[in-house]
Image (cartoon, rainbow, N blue to C red):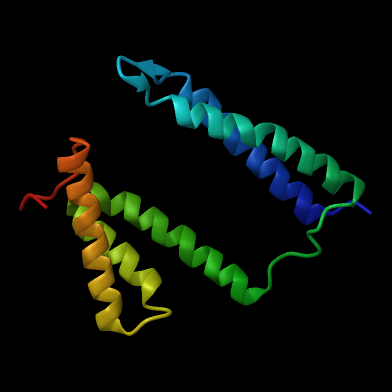
Length: 148
């Protein structure tokens, strides 16, 4: 029997990975020092295409492992994750990397930790990543009007 959930998931991943492959063609594949910004998107999304085709075949035959759509709780978790990621991308240019990342991480960690542990971990991770990228890798990250 054809699994509609598996088919729709495989088609979605196929479309998204195809868009990413096409978009990565605009980025340089190599740079003077090694792989360019288009290297990883090309390979990772390019790898997803045959994998999604294989899963599409499995779902069409009815031999995939997906049995049903997610239950209500899992669906709400997926909406929370997608909403949080979207909000992170929207807020990043305004709040900067540190504040956006702190809010993003805090939202996820709050489900499993107390508020003070969640806040501490969020601040430590965001600030550490900011300094790693800006100082260690000399890669500029978005900052807010106060410079963080």
